[in-house]
Length: 172
Image 1 (cartoon, rainbow, N blue to C red):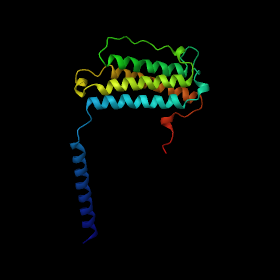
Image 2: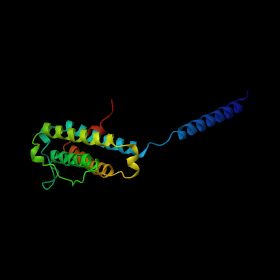
Image 3: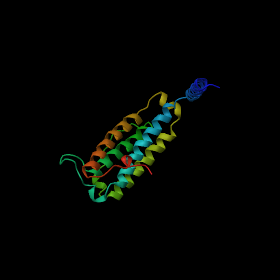
Image 4: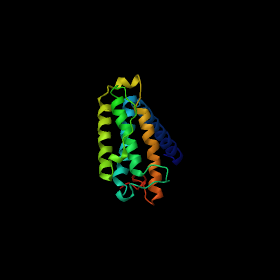
């Protein structure tokens, strides 16, 4: 068989294989709204919890500027959003009540409170039927966005201290 013909057949075979792969990939439906909301909410909370556990305890009172929250206070503020989501997600008429960071003076107490807020909010989120997200994605979308904004701020706290955030480190 001439080399030219082999190249054409090989290219044609590759094209057919690529087309088949694309068709197969398109037959899988995109994730549902419920699944997307749950995954994103859980992902941002996991990243923040990793940071809360990783950031040095002796730097929990660090502020980027004097008028800003400390690292620990930002974590407590994020947890306040989770507390709100856990209640509002159950349909309770609730206002965003800021959890007082003075009640969490150590890294250990901040991390424990964040973990509880994540557990409570994710339990509520998982308890909701998938079809409830067709009516509304709130409070989940708003709280996820809020947490993601503060995740970015926490990255700045890391960088200002010469540290590399967990998500930016090489994967092992």
